[in-house]
Amino acid sequence: MTLQTQIIFGLFLVSLLVTYGNLQWNQPVVSILNRWVRWIITSLLIASSAVEFQWSGRPFWLIALTTFLGWFVLETLYNWAIISALSRSPIPLFPRFQRNSDGDEWPATKQFILLRDWLRSQGFSKLQSVKASLDDTVAIRSSIYQNEDRTIRCQVMFFPGRSARMSVSYVLSTQTKEGELVITDNVCLPFGGYYPDTWFIERKPLYRSLCRLMKFHRRRIQRDAVNVEAWDEDEPLEELNRQQRTLEQINMQHGFLNRPEYQEEHGRITGEGRYRLWKEIWLLNYFGSTVQY
Image (cartoon, rainbow, N blue to C red):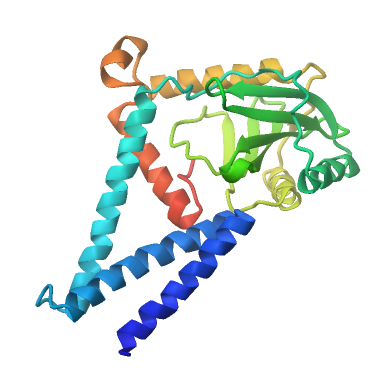
């Protein structure tokens, strides 16, 4: 067995372990590692086969590099096709929320029950349960909590995942007396668009622990000497939908979205918007980061 074959075989075993771990834990870090291993092992396997069976007279490293770049091109085309389909689909890009009275706002699993208990232990109380429908069968369910002094709102968002599993993300929001918003989230979905100038966003998709994300958010408030304004005691539903409308308007003004009269012909997302979305998909999938806002 040649050294090349040993390396490929070792990477193949690593790929199997990482794939198993990804199915078990569904963690972004494991998913990222799985993508890199899959990309590298495919490049090496094709190059090794080409040399072994004399498909090409080029050096092993050149075939591997060419295959590596070819994978990038193919995945780019795939992601671009997904973005184009999304642009012309009826799925809302900035979905509106409504009250959730179905009784299914919080999954009854040990993981999520412990999460709810942790929120209560930290002095957070539930304000409202809402949901946003993406189509007739898929909805984002969310519960909004607020701490005792009304300085931090925590939006717990449940997304339908693979194998009937639910994935969870958090959005922490603090408003200032100057009318600004300080937002920290760990949402793993690509955005790629624009935010209002008065919103200060930090996205941490690799911070899966709410405790860790909360500590980071509090450090931001202290570090930036934020002049905190307590949230109103009103239900947050109206505020959420106002934010969604603001995002939609801002992204239309900045050229991420086409204006309504052009959407039937060109789709909802502009060429610039598709590029920004594609770039964020790559950053999330392979580096666990997002565009700096």
